[in-house]
Image 1 (cartoon, helix red, strand yellow):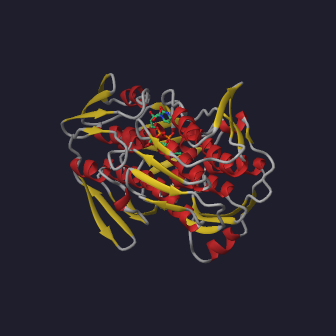
Image 2 (tube, rainbow, N blue to C red):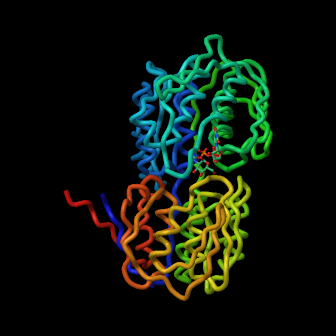
Length: 430
Ligand code: UD1
């Protein structure tokens, strides 16, 4: 397993391009199952999770055309371009060995069921951050007339006469359930209302792509979505939005070194209240042409609670905690979305952080400095928090289990070293 070695203390400065959003790309790729037309997505990040989903879609019978990639590069654009053609889908089973690698695989359920009237999808695995059930996805689909059984670890869903529009009221906000239901409802008979829907920019990006494919959706960006079913969708071309989590993670990496970097393609309008929280911690943001300048001279403690968008994202909680370990004063960080999402805490403490956990809250008291240590990445965002801590720490930090990081951050060590960080990947010895 690869490791990442960081010698902390270098002040970051330079320019970095933010890649396409993984969490937008995954549902968009699943939307290709809804049509016989070709869905061409550009600005896809080159990440392990994207490859996993490509493999899942290919085994369903989706044809992937990456010819566009070269022309895209030639045109000076970044990211991957893939044309997806789901005309020949001949298998509606999503098997355990692929689904267990990535929870977002469950997003094939809604599209397969809507277009083919049946789907068999393994119950998902994914990051070890709590139990993470899929009951809202299943109850929502049942509201649209699906018959759902669980059989030997598989969700078996049937809608032989097609799905029927209806009102689905989510008891709490779920990004994935909103996306699954929105995709399924595009081909249902009649109108579907999704109440208490997620408002994340990735949900809106999916909705905008579905509209390009011929779907009738209103209310994007609000908590009530209305989808009028149509008899068929067609192909479309769509660029994936830049990754807001990568944007803020890189901003925090620069800030922890009291540095200054330009984030090219960053979309501050997608950061919601994360930008205010980072400003409260002492990070300065100023718009520049085509992006955002980030600088920081002093970090101060601040309180943060994770919430659905536009609140502070749970996917930035670990990174924010690492940032605040060397801030002056104390910070209270409360995780309200996932249970068991504090696995980075003991690792940060091994680097000298002063953190006290009380249930779903962590009290972080700023320390003068962190010291490098060998640490273990436990999930995707926790890995990034250890990299951020390593950039600030005295001496060498060795981050193990880097495969977590590779699921969600593209060429992270290249991006950071281009800005002056002393960071290298140590390849696995076989
Ligand atoms: C998505 C993101 C993930 C992010 C999360 C919250 C993708 C691919 N992943 O995950 O990075 O951390 O949103 O912003 O976009 N829940 C249930 N039952 C369900 C569904 C969810 O109880 O059927 C719970 C979850 O356990 C969690 C909460 O609802 O406590 C929110 O989860 P959800 O928004 O669904 O997260 P994901 O879509 O899986």
